[in-house]
Amino acid sequence: MPSVTYIAASGATHTVDVPLGENVMRGALYNDIDGIIGECGGGLACATCHCYVDAAWTDKVGGPSSQDERDMLESAGAEVRPTSRLSCQIDMTPALDGLVVHLPETQF
Ligand code: FES
Image (cartoon, rainbow, N blue to C red; front, side):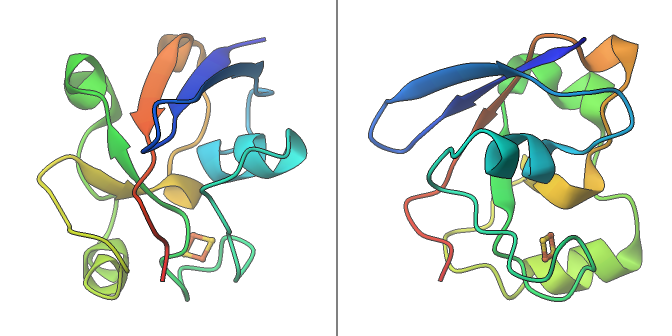
């Protein structure tokens, strides 16, 4: 099962297994990782699953998967950067095993 490392703004780091076919938002929720809320359950309607993809992973993860994701990112509570993604839109694949994401200081 692929793993994902979540690094909080405080520096706290958690590495957990996230099943294939699940997404990075659910991986955080299933493991009680603070910093990702996922208020809308992955419906592209909240931006409380904002994360920053680690620079080493941006090529593999790619940019926003749709215009809807780009639009919703504008509602993010923290600064939006070139590496910003909505974690509910990053589906786990074997190629993303070891993925590292950074969590913003706030989701509101
Ligand atoms: S959980 Fe709401 S947009 Fe990702």
